[in-house]
Length: 319
Image: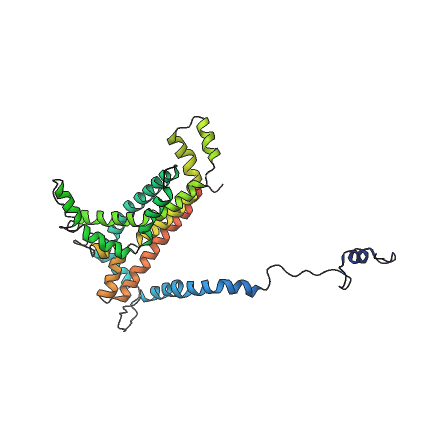
């Protein structure tokens, strides 16, 4: 039994009543939660170093080189804004912007639409749907260069695709020798390569929708189209926004498909910005001019991304 003097102050009596045995009586001190601050920085530091070494420093260096006539062999000389002014007069760069814009306008909606359709189809109770998801995801996990090399063989003039068309009595199509068909092949291969990832993300968003909400809408008489527009799309909008942002960024940076399948041809019909940047830097040995192209591409992607971030407030629902 613990005896407490009644003539001690009230605060000391309260402290003595809760103080554990073996510890000095008085007000208890609590250690700050989370430990020392350096522990948190120790976990964050590797990521910050990687961000600085592989993202920030190269981006700043590219911006600086854009104001020079630097080459891969050295001999850097400051030229001011000449490289950026030259971009406005360069017909090949303007053509690459047009080609990439067409690629983005066709590839992004096709990718998102196919991904959403496949995700909704796999949401139904079909046999082996998990295996089907794995099959559709395999192209996204395999190297783009290898996939593009295979499709280049398939779409050659005497390739498997034209042989199959000839077998059913159809004329062969100049897949890689006609500009329009070549761009269509590049877009098609790109969609085939990447829609599996978006399908998985959108499928996860669909799985998070409560079945009670769908059941209630059916009781209220909502049809399939009404349920999709008024219930499914708003509830899956966060996943849809995420996939759209990543797809747009990736579309502007497309390179391997055009480089391996067509090499930018025929007649620069598939010359994307990234492919033109590569040829400028490593074929024409104009590193400064290529850095200016990279800076402009960064600005284009940043504008589109900021526009999407601004627009999400009107159509993305997080509640």
